[in-house]
Length: 334
Image 1: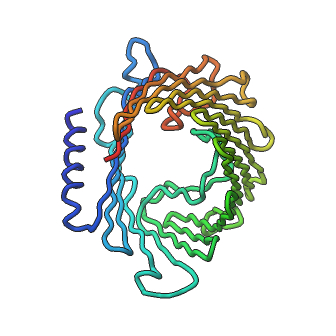
Image 2: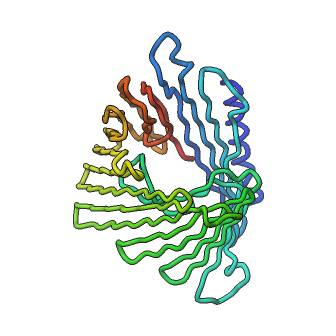
Image 3: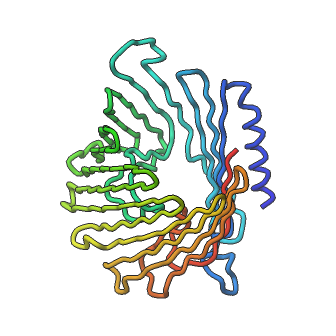
C-alpha cells in the first residue's frame, strides 16, 4: 500500500507540473477498494482493488493530450505489475489547425486508448448485455482514428496495428440518435460483424423517457444478437430494464434496476437473470452512496446464489463476480 501512495503522490506532482507545458489541464481520479468477493477465513484473497488516474492537457486550441493510469489488483498483496498505462493519446482538430473553412470538420486521434468506438447507448447502469456496441482494447502497438462531421452526421474510421478495422457512421435528430458500424480483422473483413444502435431520449416536464434498441450480426458465425432497454425517470426516482441475447438464447440476459436520489444521497438496487442458466436468478446488487463535495463514498453488497454461473456486474459493471460479497469505495475527481 505504501508503494501505491508513492505512485499517487508522483501523479499528483505530475498534475501540478503539467500546466508548465499546457494551456489548460484537467485531471480526475477514481479509487476503489475492498471489492470483497468472499467473507470467509481469508476474504482479502478474493478482494478486487482498483484505482484510476486521468490527466488531460490542452496543448493549444487544436490539440489535446490525455493519459490514464489504472491499477487493477486481485488478492491482498501489492502487485506492481498490476499498474498499467491504459491511455496515452493525442486528439487533433485538423480543419481548425489548417485554417480550412469547409462545410465539414475533420478530427483525428492517435495513440493508445480504450476505444469505445460506438455510442454504447443502453438503459441500465451496468449495460450487462449490450449487443450493438463496438470497442477495441488491444492496442499495444497503437491505433489511429479519423472522424469527419457533416451537419448532424459523423463518419468514423479506426485502425489499429493488431489487425482490427472499424468503420461507422452516426447521426442525431432531436431526441433520436442512430449508429451503424462494422468491425472486423483487417486482412479478412468478411469475418467481421455489423452493429446498429438506436436511441430515443425525451423529456415531458418531470417525466423522462428513454428507449435503446440495438442489434449485432456476426458474419463469420452467422449469429444474431439483440437487446432492448427502456428507462423512465420521474423527479428523484429512476426505473430501468433491459433484455437481450444471442441466437439461439435470445433472452439469456435480463436486468432491472431502481434508483432514488435524496439530495446528496442515492440508493440503488439492480437484479440480474439469465434464462440460459439452469436457475434464472443470478444476482442482486444493493448500493448506497453519498456525495461529499467532489467525492462520492459508497457501500454495497452483491448477493449471488450458489447456483450463479454467469458473471454479474458489481457496482455498475466496475467488475464482474459469480460469488458476490461486500464492496466499499470512493470516487473522486479533481
